[in-house]
Amino acid sequence: MTFFFYLAAAVAVISTLFVIFGRNPVHALLNLVVSLLAVAGLFFMLGAPFAGALEVIVYAGAIMVLFVFVVMMLNLGKEIEDQERRWLTPKVWFAPAVLSVLLLGGLLDVLLTGGQTHAAATTTIDAKQVGVHLFGPYLLAVELGSMLLLAALVAAYHLGRHD
Amino acid sequence: MAPISAWSANTWSLIVYTVAVIGIVGLMLGLSWILGGRDWGRAKDEQFESGVLGQGTARLRFSAKFYLVAMFFVIFDVEALFLYAWAVSVREAGWAGFIEASIFIFILAASLVYLWKIGALEWAPASRRPSSPSEPDSPAAKPDRPAR
Image 1 (cartoon, rainbow over the protein chains, first blue to last red):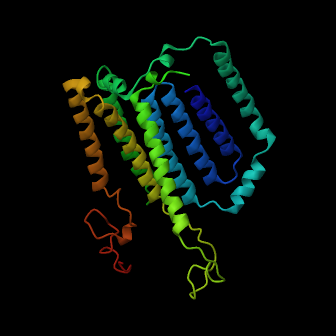
Image 2: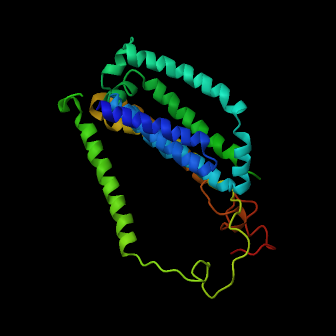
Image 3: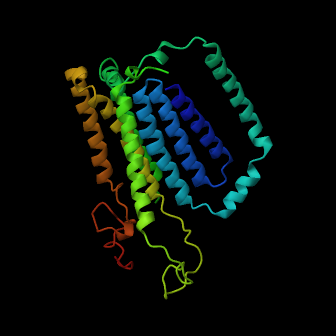
């Protein structure tokens, strides 16, 4: 279990590095899919299978497919790779890298000193519990969510069509 | 290392599923790699052997229509997730959950019917669609454009 956890975490980190340093947008997106799948694996091992399934279905499945779709439709060619090479200078990635290292420090503090973790991290919350709560006390939120999705569908069509 | 009993049955079935998927994909790709013929030739890399030589690249821009369809897919996917959460807890959620899910599915269906009615799910450009009263630029309205 612990081994698989660190394996999935390593896969997530390495594939994300490929995303950052990849020059071809489509390859970067495919690496991002791998990264999201690894994060989904982490969710499964942390006892949140519904969050893991969400990660696979929505992020790796739908949103990444949307991104790949768009990038492939834009039909970026060789010149984009040259542009990427010119853009990825130390001046650009230095500040985000420092911020990421700060986050890593916090994570290592929790991991090494066994700091205070939230109770949710030690219990398994499966899809059934999520469903019981969504369709129990949070009925109205689901109702509002359906309205929001309806509005999103209508708005997506009317903003996206061109005439 | 956590004991095996701590793993839920879901996790095990997920692992079995993953292994089966990888196995099937590997089998399909491997078999076609082993059994498939491979040969090379001077004209093998051309699009049409003994045909017209290719000119230029195959890079062309596609209509934003396809992007719209992908967008609808994402939104309907999120709606399916709500139903997934309801489906696994249908007994626990009780009648209140059932009524709520019914309203949810009704709104979902209403949005689908709306998108269908306004022609958002049409793939073809407006000039190539079969004529309908709601389309002002259908072939019937534009006789100078040949309908294919």
